[in-house]
Image (cartoon, rainbow, N blue to C red; front, side, top):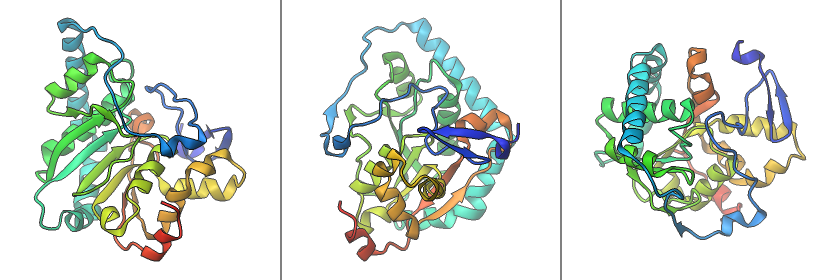
Length: 277
């Protein structure tokens, strides 16, 4: 079915003929809705809750990921994705990089690589970007549901698994790409709040759910509970350059639909100050 014909439910609200705002993600365990005080939670040490793995399990997962990387890398979806970077958004990356040679990548909310396909497709896209764009540096990954096996495979692929649950509040002290397709609104909001200064926002790019779609949802569903966790998302829209990607085929719809690049180049400091940080 064509994407435009889908009717999707979002936190109890349905957008007919539209897109999800917060995807009940196939391939991810649903998190419980956060309490009002989540933004005040402190960073905390994290380790996988399971303690056992075995070489066979790791081998099977590595084979699954490698097969997925090959599939994505040879797809029309990836060719189109590459072309968009090279023709539409490369100048924005150059602006963020400035005199730096590399931009680091932080992947939040990847989900379970062992259990589902969308997280594997998303990780594959990140790995292919690192392979094909020389200006992408180290990759850090975090999701509280990662298993020991998944962590070991990520490390074998050259990624670093973050050992602290930052709740998305990572400051962009240097050029940073936050790779966050289909994360919850609270996570984007936490990230923006932690970087609510012109010099920090100008250091970052977010690849994730369309902020334009969040804004549309807010205008339609004025009494939706999700609005409480979208304050910074909505405030940043006025100085966001957003570029939607094309999923091209149904094979990549679940993993990437409604995903966009978000750059923050012309930040209005007065507008930032009007929002509590």
